[in-house]
Image 1: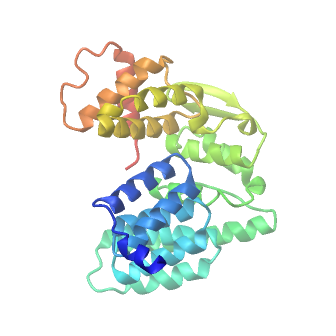
Image 2: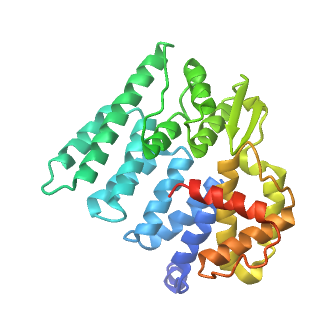
Image 3: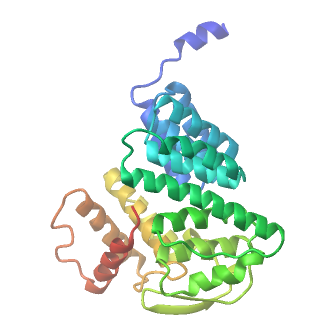
Length: 315
């Protein structure tokens, strides 16, 4: 009976793609366990699907399942599936979390010997080796309670460097992290990453955050999560109501989330959720090719603020 039933199971057309899409939605909403369940189903349907595999590896990483994520990255790299550079970077981030620092150099060094390796790629691989060595030194120092932290120059490296702090005991280096947050030279995205790590580890020290022409003194331990802020939630709900324009609404929500993260711990200067939802739906239509999307839009100041946020977005 069971065998007969299993033979009748025929995937609906487009089911795999829908599972990946829903999984990424869950991941964006930080519902990692649900995302993993959906993405595992998609990956089991087709292990050669790069989108399913890479998305699942990212979901594992976000859920702190670094061993599973690293294993999947390694498998895909050996099979030549997915974006090569993206998988290498994710693999290295997993090794950092697993504190397998020696494996970073052992994995990447042979790649540097490849024939006709583009200079840009060679430089990128060398920087990942350097990052692994730096994190090893930071970890060893942290174990001795003499840890320090200093951001590197490249924005991409700063992202990896900051993300690697998430599961470390940052208390020995909290003063250095606070100094980087308070620096006018630090990118708003990195400021949010670091501030959120302080919040997650319940650091109660005063932090003065300056970004977007505003300044505020905050206690990270008392802050809400970036996407728990009331204005964000209200605006997101209003955008979701536009289910008749599903793709437009999905892009608008993604843009809203990116900008909310860049603004954190602040929000938009205009706190009218209805106007914000209208603005991001218009922005979504503009992304989809409508050059007149903002024609007759009523709030020029809000539009200017959105344009500034767009310029700061990280690809």
